[in-house]
Image 1: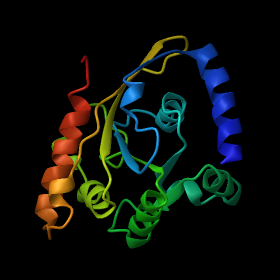
Image 2 (image 1 turned 30 degrees about the vertical axis):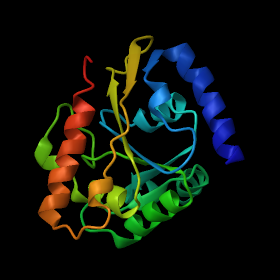
Image 3 (image 1 turned 180 degrees about the vertical axis):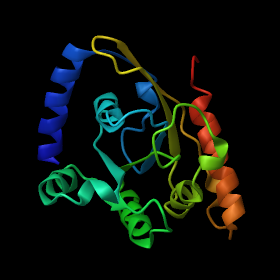
Length: 194
């Protein structure tokens, strides 16, 4: 994770010149142990902003298209990210996610699966809650508010962890996972203008 720290350090320097970043609720990130970090997704810059906002390294689930170029793929892998096929139930991505959590690290997921401008509950993916529950991990909701215009303000609001312990040993249907994922998405958007 040495490479991650160098890239994060450079990102902090550059982004603090280009934007005004306000981070609220940083203390809601557990100092150690597994965490599923779930955020809204408004820009390709979101993973960088989250990496700046969160003091611990984040392993992001990223769309597989980003890994088509070998050089970019190597760079992204070095930063701890791994690919996901957004058009299907990607068992490999689920396994990679669970390994991140088993290693007591932070997994970064955008529950809507793509960039969106406003909340659409139907876009919440059941895999988000499935990974959190199977990985026996708390979920930390994050809301990013910005237009990403140069020298504008970026607000990152980090919510309190959501514990899903009540579901850990239960057999749930896809619909139940989807419902829990919708609740996670609601908790993200509840941080808007909080």
